[in-house]
Image (cartoon, rainbow, N blue to C red; front, side, top):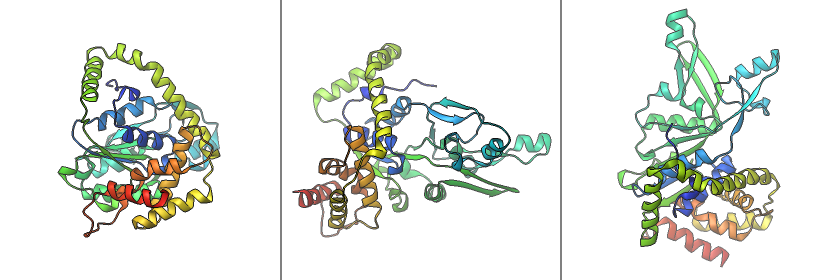
Length: 340
């Protein structure tokens, strides 16, 4: 497996890095979409986050990464094994699973294990990418180029948190809760609105336009590729610090309060922007709470809402033929109107 570039060593791209950290603290935020220039570090950041995350506890031998501390969410196999004997647990890295653009539906959802069927005459299920991604991240590079039938499939699973397979005499249902992370270049096409709405946060990624940042990016990348072991050792302290910050934020998250005043601000901001439905308010509240937890705060403030609002709302705006301003500008204007 290739060595990942350290997350803490990424130059700039603060909005993208913050969105990924928030999704790591609270998966209920709903995933991250990073759209922008080619070669600006989108894929690097996603893979760096995977290497950064603390290991998670799983049931030994489970094909779906079931959490031994949450028996109510067990797959059928773990439920059956738990009834007969105790289950052993172990800690493993958080999975980050790539969903290739050309993937077949069988590879994504799972299918009949042909080897066992032919060799032993048994009907057995071979889990797909959704099973591997459970409790982890499902990463789609060039998400705007994903085929429509896979988009529909992801929408169903993301909404239910379960993958249901009914084919070839098999009837399988297993948990499939994951953080969806998508990247893409808007010049190559837009994302379907139904899938766009499923991403909790949307960030804009731009090539650095100041000389010192560009020089530092090139210097660090060259240093990493010349001697990755030495570069990782150089950044180990920062990575450990960030890993502890994520762990502490996860522990603190249930204790962070969202006051009625903060909820009113969030709702007023969404009403000002005319966002459809209530997913905007929910995402804004959850993201602001995760941000507060990351910063060691016990309650959500206006500063948290203002900071995360562009990422939570820019992709939920209706098109306004009378307003040529981009979505980010419209969100900033609404923030000024609501917060002053």
